Length: 212
Image 1 (cartoon, rainbow, N blue to C red):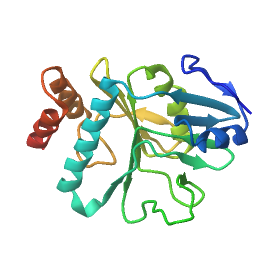
Image 2 (cartoon, rainbow, N blue to C red):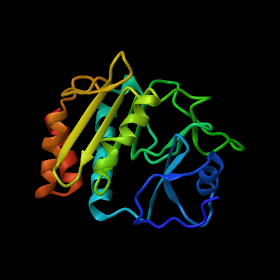
Image 3 (tube, rainbow, N blue to C red):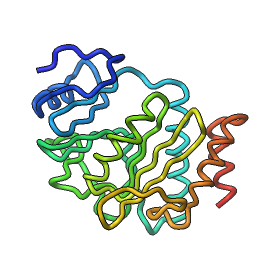
Image 4 (cartoon, rainbow, N blue to C red):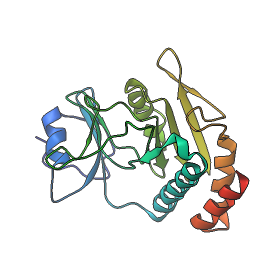
């Protein structure tokens, strides 16, 4: 078992599924965990100011879109662990299900999204403050292998959104318009991010709502 992981390591470490489960169920410390191919990636510590305000902005954006498309039944689970038992685990900042069959929890059940029980999300995203390289590389590959239709990477420092859709070959291709959220131009998301240079995230969300 892994006994000590330092936040500054920021490397994939050899680990078993049991190592992952031990950290996932640690009641003293909370981690953002990724597991794939017998390797573990751990993100520790509290979010920084930029990560937090960008993250909350996208929560507000999804709420605004939910009010615009109520028939699509959007459900969000940002930060929740998602597991393909024994194989892969991820914890995206943004998790979006569309439709009636979103995960639900009942007393006595695991607190995580089990992909042996539920389908993959329609969309996931990462708020990239200090993790841009891995978000555009290893995490992108893992999300594609989990069959997630769309993946966004929000580059906090450059006010940029990288959006990818899953093609018929199971690989991500960059896209300019969301395939999951109808007619949503990725450029509009970037313009909304640019509002943060002079506005609060709630003001940026209001600006976004006025554009749609």
